[in-house]
Amino acid sequence: MINVAIDGPAGAGKSTISKGAAKELGFIYVDTGALYRTIALSAVRNGIIDDKDAVIKMLESIDVKLGFENGTQCVYLNGEEVSAYIRTPEISMGASKVSAIPKVREFLLDLQRDIAKNNNVIMDGRDIGTVIIPDADVKIYVTASDEVVLPKAECKIFLTASAECRAQRRYKELIEKGENVKYEDVLSDVNERDYNDSHREIAPLKPSEESVIADTSELTLDESIALIVKIIKEHM
Image 1 (spheres, rainbow, N blue to C red):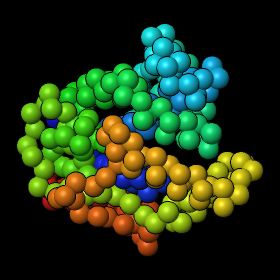
Image 2: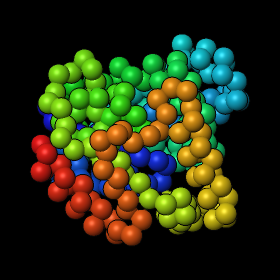
Image 3: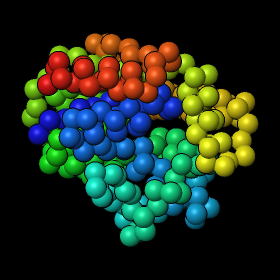
Image 4: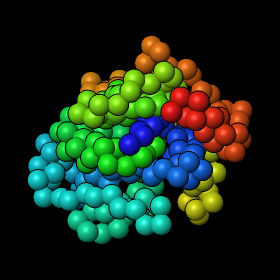
């Protein structure tokens, strides 16, 4: 199995770029952030998003699964397909909160590692290369699980873009979906998530010392995908 891990801050284009690269290479794309968003969705629905102990207790009674239909990832919460409900600003902030809870990360760890062990994947998130699959074949600030023996990557890339650029992309996406949002509020959310993700005690967001910083601020989507595919092919 070939595992590619892509890490980077919120709104850097990880999901879109990873999905495009996976399609071109014939790999399965795994958006690990969708798993944390699903936990957050359940916590919001139960009114406990700010209650750490209640969130931990909730884990005992929920079932989260990933499925793939025609190569497209679907995420299920207690059997309900919830992909359409996990992309709102409220759930984005909630995902940042629950991802800082060690028990939540433990809850999702085996699921993510099992997918990487059994498939050729491009997996994106905040700690894929450092925690989930630390020995991935290609690290785009990426990694493979310590339970799966894979060649050490020769190249690590941390995919990022300026906060303003990421906020503008997110703002455009939300407007196209009919959301009533202000750019200033989206930028504030991006900055807050960056701070929370980089300062959490467990698996903080950060590039490794060996990482090459890939800044997509000035690149088009096609140019970003081409860059990632080129790197993967060179280092597979």
